[in-house]
Length: 284
Image (cartoon, rainbow, N blue to C red; front, side, top):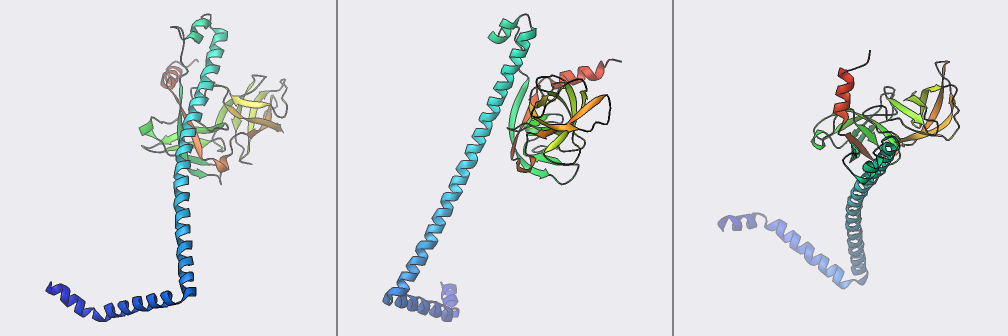
């Protein structure tokens, strides 16, 4: 108690000044209508801005949650589409096709899962571009897994940590992707020439085949990384080929890398088995 009294005594001048200021302000705004209206208007404006900001933050949070739900729904729908295509393809070549569609013992499940993730890093200013996403080993992500967007192919996972993964996108000079032209089923190799983020080159296409502007380009499925018929882009024009025995075309990429925010990683549950078989029993 003595300490409190001593403190109040030492600060008596400051306390008196604050008390007089309060009295002066009360007298000023209680006796003057204009001043009162000004302070009330200012207070209302500040209160309104705070309320609007609160609503904006709440709406943004709700929108973020809705985006996550839509991503998960889209991932599920994409997997269902790929599963149906997979089953129909096997029906055409399997003598037990009725079992495949009815889920009998002969049915083989589509081996890929779609895992939604957010882009947290994106370099677009060199020939060694990369993308960082916010899922990693904790979610079962590892190198050599395919990455796609709602538009089309994005790239391949090349490195992982516990919570992040690094993606080699199509717009990297080290990216090579086996692709086929829809309708013709001819296969070529997609490799970025470093000219534009919107285009890449599809090379090693048979010269006798006919291609037109606007033809769709898909993944070929000739690897354990990508399933077939994932959309890559469309043919824009014929390009110069380094091999006279083949032709090359410029492909307008489906994915817009400059605005990429969310992607899906494709986990192939049969990838290890296929890779091990091909590595240990290569044909010579």
